[in-house]
Length: 127
Image 1: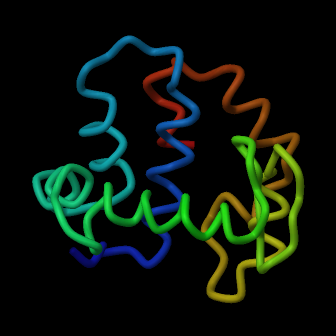
Image 2: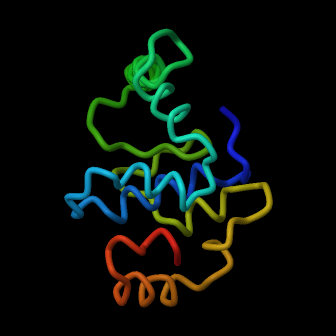
């Protein structure tokens, strides 16, 4: 599955984490749509499939890599091989990202925070 927008994964993850408090069964579908992921079904198949290229397979590989790196608590964030601890900010991701910056990287954090605070939780993805 290749997203139609290069940074769709960032938007999808940000949307999901921004809506954790929403008890909406369709949150994943909403976030996929707002992140321009064309096929929710392909996303779901990846997340629930079998084999090394599936979500569970990648999660297992991630756990094995974390163990090999001596990481034994979650969440522990590593970015470009550097251990950052237990948090990761959008600014850290934007600073490390070498491609064309997603729209969220081009807005001051205070502006994003004020939009998020004022938004309906279901609209966080559309900032």
